[in-house]
Length: 574
Image (cartoon, rainbow, N blue to C red; front, side):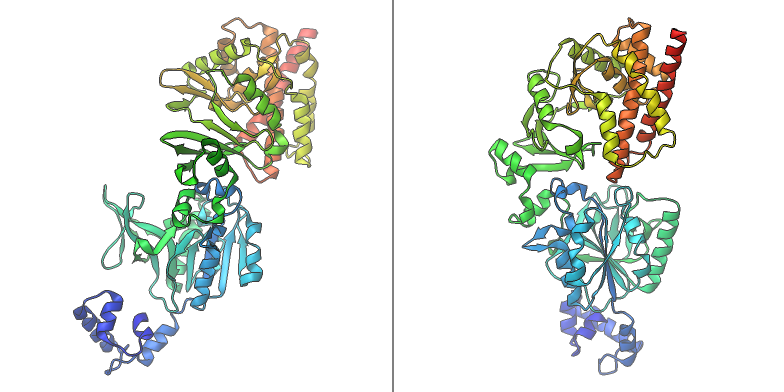
C-alpha cells in the first residue's frame, strides 16, 4: 500500500520492479486490494485506503545512546559511539537528518555515558534527552523502558548504525524489526519468506539483527507490557529485543535489507573499514602503538576489550600475529596513582622473568603497552595449589630485596582516599571503625622486621599461571617500599578469606613457621587494608563506579579484624 501511494499512477510492471516480485504476484495482490476496496476499479487509491494510510504515519523516534560501547575501545575513552564521525558526519546526526527527511522531528535520545557530549543536539536539532543514570549496570532494555510512553507509531534506533540510503519512511504498517540478509552464528533468529521471525534450529545460521524497529500502537502497547514485567523482575541484563521474543517466534514481523546497505560500528576496526579518514581514528593509544612498532593503524588487528578492571580500561590487539595489551588509565586514576613511581618500579624489575615485558610506559599519564602473556590464566584463590604457587613467588620476590626511592605509606593513603571522596562515609559507624584501625599503628610499626619493595595489589587476579605451572605477577602500579607481611594480608582480603583460610595462607607463605605476633600483625594489616580499600571504593562510587559486595567486604575486614587484634593486645598486655 505504501508503494502504491507513492506511485499514484499504478503501473503493475513498475510495482513488480519496485517490490522485487513477479508480475503474476503483483496482479494477484492488486485484485485483492480491489476486492477489499483499497483500490478503485480503475486502480486508483480509494478513500478507504487513504483513511487507512492516515493512521500509519510514523510520528516519533527514540534513539538509544546510553551505553559505554565497550567494544569501541580505545575510541570510547574520548567520545561516545553515537558521535563517531563517518564521512565527516557524526553517526547520530546522520540518523536525525534521515528522520527529518521523512517528516519526523519528535526525536528523543536516551543518553548515559558521556551524556554531556550529546547536549548540543538539543539546540541544533530540537531533540529531547532522556538520561539513564543506570547505564553502567543495566542493559538497553532499561534505556528503552525509560522511553516507554513514546513508542507507538515510532521508530526505535541504535546510535551506532550507518545507512547508505534512508531506511525510514513516511508510511509504515505493520510493525517490523530490521534484519540483514547476512546470515551469522551470532543471531538466533531467521526471517521466513512470509516475514515471520522464528528461532533458528540447532546449528542453523540466523539473520543478522540490526536493531531498528517500527512499532504501531498495538505492538507498542504489547512491548511496553512485556518490558514492564521484565523490569519489575529486575531482568536488567537483557536487550530490549528479548521482550519481543515469545517462545520460538517474534512479536512482530521481520524486514530484510541487503547487508551492503548498512554498517554497524561496534569496533575500531569496523570504523576503520568504513571510513579510514574518520577523525576518531586519531587516538592517543593507537598512536602509541603505531610509534612503538613503526606501523600504520591498518596493521593493528583483533582489537577487543579485556575484562574491565577496577582502576583501568585495557584492550588486547594483534600486530604481526603477536598479541599485546594496551592499558588506558580509568576515571580518577591520576589522583590515585603516581605514574612516575610506577615507572621507577618497572625499571627496577624489568629484567625479572616473573613479570610482564613492558614496551612503553608513560610516567605522566599512565598509558602502558606490554606483551600479552600467552597461555596463562588468572590464579584461583580457592585453589590451594594455585595459592602455593602464588605465595612461593611472592616470598621469592620479597627475598630479592628490590629497592625504589618511594614507599607505599598506607596510613597516609587512608587519609588521602578519605579526603578525595569529599563527603562523610556511608557507613554509620565509620569513625569508630577508623579509630580502632588507627589504634593498631603502634603495634604494627613496632614489629616490622623486613622492609623491601612490595606489590601492594597482590590479589589472585594479578598472579598468572601458564600450562607449565610457571607463575607471573603483573600490574605493579601501587608498588612501593613496605613490610612484606602487608602483601600477604592484601591477598587474603581480596580473596575474601575467612579466618581459617587466612591462617592457611599465612602458613603457606611462612612454611608453617610464623610466630604469633607476626600472625596478628598480618591480621592487623587486613584491618588497615580493609579500611584503605573501603575508602577507595567510596571515592570510586562518587565517580559512579560501583564495586558491589567488594566494598562492604573490605569494610567488614576493617571492622572485624581491628577488634580481633585489639582484643589480642588487651589480653596480652593485661
